[in-house]
Amino acid sequence: MNKNVEISRDITNGVFGNTNSKFLKRDKWSPNEIKLFLNLIFRLQENKSLNVELTPGDLYPNLSNSNRFDYLNKILNGIKSKSFFMKIDDDKYRNYSLFSYLEYNNAREDIIVQFNKDLQEQLFNMRSFSKIDLDELMKLDSYFAIRARLLLSAFNHRKDFILDIERFKILFQIPETYKNSHIEKKVFEFIKKECPEVKEINFKKSGRKATHVIFKYDFKLLKAKAAKSEDAYRLPDGILIAIEKAKRNRFILEAWNPKVDAWIIKKVDSEGEEVVKKILRIAYKGLLTPIKSNLVAYLNKILENLEAEEEKKPAPPKPPQVAEKPVEGPPEEKVEVVETPELLKKAEELYLKDTNTKAFNPVHRKIFNSMKVQYLLKASLEK
Image 1: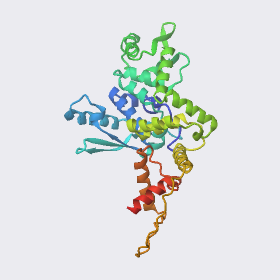
Image 2: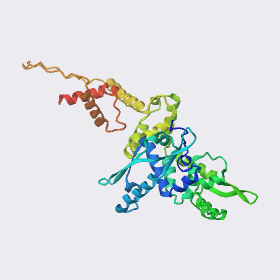
Image 3: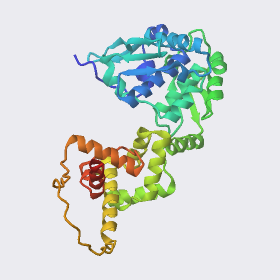
Image 4: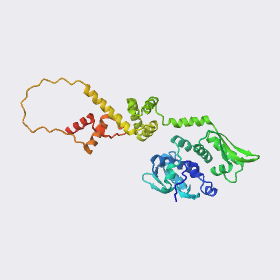
């Protein structure tokens, strides 16, 4: 029987939205559990690994050192006690534990969370959030506001969203004792207070009976938030023009320039290699050749230009020859460069030292065949 069927990309349905109310009642999620779980999913999908390392100090900087570890441990065990509901071939829901184990490293004060391998495909395909969306979710305190934001993120809202009243009560885990007046004061008000993009939320009635809940959205605010999320990986204007030209030409060398190179090196130093790679993957979407190969090709082009400039320079005048007596001694040994893994490694070190940059650490055979690196390699061997 295939367990990995009906993979839900909607995190609200995949984890919190099972229609079986008795399970929901037993497995009610607290706001802190939901926020930590979303953070775990973000890290899991970023690292493409079922093992996620958490450091209490990073997650809860406002707590004292003695309380952080216990606080995180309590929330993790709360999540561990929950069940992940997965629909399988026989159209029934089966529940699985989310975590295989929690490993504690008291010396380093971190916790390694390993997710259940049976849920690997579900977890990797589960809908996640951008860093900006996740940061906004982390600021919410009300369970109802978090659920509203999750629903908003899960669906493409081009119009007002209408939810059946029974489905609404299940998704938002409304207590059975709540009347409509309680829902308006204790649910609707919390949502509108913490989620400004929800302009209005009301009951739709048939006669005197409430049949649906209507979410009315502020579409201007939604559009502004979407633009803000997109700007997180937007490049400076001059760089963007160069990239657009590269996309049209289908080859990056025709649009690359020192300004782009300087921007990349600065970005690598300030934000790290992986961030830059992510930005470039978005920017160069559609290019046929991989980013790393293009960068290597660009560096090779610089070396070729340097070699061409050296060849154009006029040769210095030869000094007058003075006859000298031959000095007897052992014949001079000719230094011959033989390409071996050890020498290639040495050449790479010299190249990085000479160019004073470690941008993407481009190890490529063409670099080692260039005249410049061969010269440096010979010079090091002769010393």
